[in-house]
Image (cartoon, rainbow, N blue to C red; front, side, top):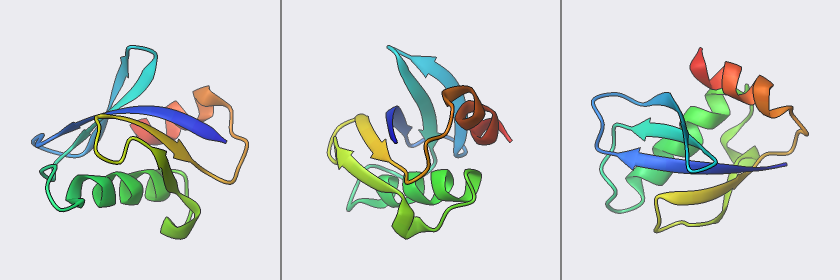
Length: 86
């Protein structure tokens, strides 16, 4: 399943922050340098959805705030949002 994500790096903490332009918005504590924000995003999503980091991948937008993330499960979007809020 593919999920559209909007990332805001350099936040005070990593957390789900609602929706933005049709994407799930996630604030990331790490800065957008050397792939640190991407690594933290994958870690946050994998922990929230109880998946391994290897099961979560960035399909597009590696150097953009807009990303498409792929996870192996076919989750309902409402389920994903609820898990990210926890």
